Image (cartoon, rainbow, N blue to C red):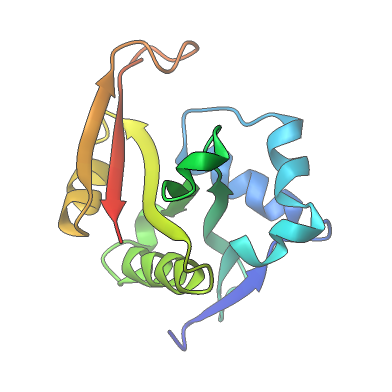
Length: 161
């Protein structure tokens, strides 16, 4: 952990998040995605991770709370992981697990959150293995989730808290 610096995502470092996301994910995120991350009520839900020595942004985790459409279902509030990843050269250094710990601590601040969810491409075997190792289950698979990608299928992962 001492080798890395964690910082909230701000307008000043947003370009670093965009660069990390462009490197890690095949999806091109919209301006509204980044605007949403910068809203004041979401500032504690997102982190950039920097290499302490090089000062380079090497990973990020971004989340948001998903409320049920029908508030009568308030026992079904989810923490959605929007992005979670680190550059390949920094993998196998427990960064992914540290990012998951960040998500778990975030969930603990909101005791009404009952589960964590995210989507990832079916073909992303490293991500699939990572989330299964961390206790997530594949709740569903959507064959044509990613319209703009060649590999369109996505798993919905869920972990009950």
